Length: 288
Image (cartoon, rainbow, N blue to C red; front, side, top):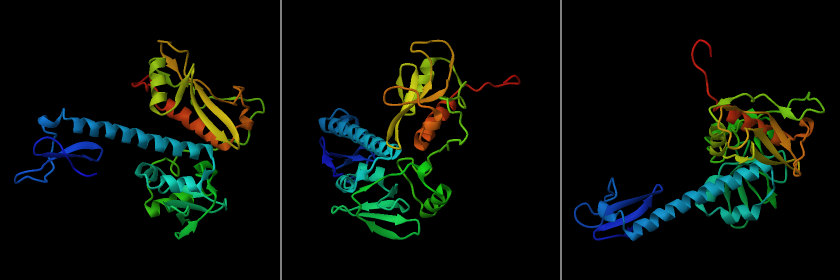
């Protein structure tokens, strides 16, 4: 970002998301200062840059959240849309190096570029850079990728770093033998918390929604809208509490039998339950 005049003898700019200043006169002209001079702290241009930095942070977070939603929901994304948003640094950062699938579901590649003409440049699993022009692409959830361990090894060889957790996202595979009438999983039930507020705060801090007595995670899997929910206790309950069972519901709020839960919904629900349980109070001492 260009340096802007601010006050007598100073220039300011956003540097790594923070307002920085440098001297514009004298022997130190052009040298960035370690701290913002007191004379500039209330300057209108400094305030404007601070507000711009806050907006850019919100925009970056919104881009990451949207791309994560596309991936978790396995929704087809128009290639033309990727090409349109690619020049935006925040969008490009969120999308760069994500695994994408075009017309051939068996051809996975890591996204490197999207041109204005709607052409995608990807590195395939043979290490070759290829050009794709599908009408839409999907950003597959890792639980849907065959040979996921091999994909992860190849990504490590390429030095791939993803802003949206995809390839190295923790996954859970659905067991084959499930009772036909079962609707709950209790693998991560019983995690102790000092009160319901602490558990709810952990849920929201991890990016999950808290509704009523549940922490929830919406997923669109196999064309079906599903919501995973972990019981965290009645609202305004001030006593010590524990994580409850994990269950899934459909768009009408009806419980979904475990046998009908899709692979992505299962993995994401278990991921949420495990993340909540990981914040539990750990007892110490001989009787722990």
